[in-house]
Length: 115
Ligand code: HEM
Image 1 (cartoon, helix red, strand yellow):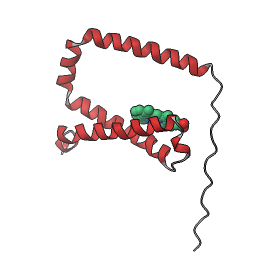
Image 2: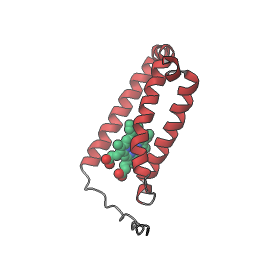
Image 3: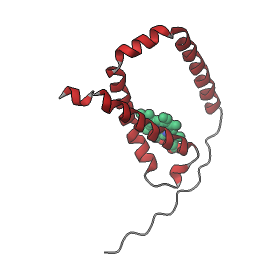
Image 4: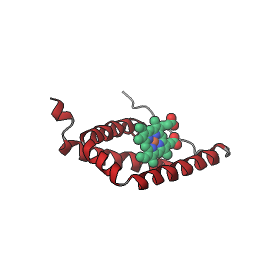
């Protein structure tokens, strides 16, 4: 039973495809797409954790390869951590210093169906 959940042949496409969906809707929402596409934000919010679980299981299933990768590319990984921390910190400071962005109004809800 356990094998069904951590089978590499399932985990890799599940991780890749859910990443594409979450990242795609996330980038679209940066451009306010969710104000025009009903349900998009809700889907993103719930597919996000789905993606995170798939990615964790994928990591777990490929642990040996990941450890090897870390050993071989330690300097690049440490440098990337520093770059991401500095960039993330700078963007957080920039975001905290800005007033909230105005949002376009949500489209009108369609009238309820007549029985
Ligand atoms: C992979 C790249 C991702 C991008 C580019 C992205 C982008 C975004 C954006 C732009 C919003 C704001 C929508 C708004 O204006 O209200 C948002 C909201 C949200 N995202 Fe993501 N996201 C990503 C991944 C994830 C993941 C992995 C998770 C969960 C594990 C997640 C969970 C959420 C949640 C819960 C919200 C709603 C926050 C709120 O209450 O407003 N996202 N995301």
